[in-house]
Image (tube, rainbow, N blue to C red; front, side):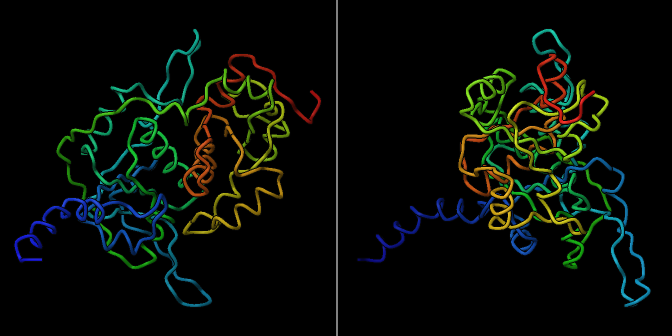
Length: 324
């Protein structure tokens, strides 16, 4: 082969090589990969406590060891865009009823992502505080919404900012305004979205596994959230408490795939079956959806967006172990 054809050969494959270099390796990444690829990704830092974005991490001296222990997560990764979780979901009218905490309409979600500086074809890494189980499902909820609107090249940082800090990586407390991005939502991915009709069919036909990801007390019906209008669970649903999704201590990380499969098996959940996950409002259930769909590779898993809030608002039947 002469020199010229060799040059042409490498030039032909340069775009592919560039794409592969910027592509995230898996839906769940570690801080080392992110540190090595900071210039190639767009970081969306989603959290409820938005003031913590520019606050220094808080440490406390351990009396036994004398070491500084991370107590509260603060700050962010340099260049990250802050996404206020209170704006990630919204209210909308569904079949004549006002349903809260559901996915925004296309244009509304586009606007939120553009304000965060997101552009078309960006490789996204979603980061949250990583201080609680709920933090990690804030990340999975945003991930699910982005996937619903057609974005596929993205990952979640395992352990969130807590892991980043404990790995002794650089933390910024300076907020910089992002230029508006040009991200546009694609056609909706209904393969991952469940409606009340889908859940009703699952109850009637038993051809789809329903997974209730709330605490066992909510599942059994000993109490309910204020925005859920009946106690108990949907008929036939199996309980997978969301606390089993992650380790309990900071940094809060996802339990590995093998152990998660073993836990689900013990609870009678088939990780390869057609499934619908739900919780009170579609937040926590995004975690088990992420685990089954993205980590375990089951591509026939949907999230019931309205979850028990919508189900009970529509006066659909529930089953409770506790008699009222």
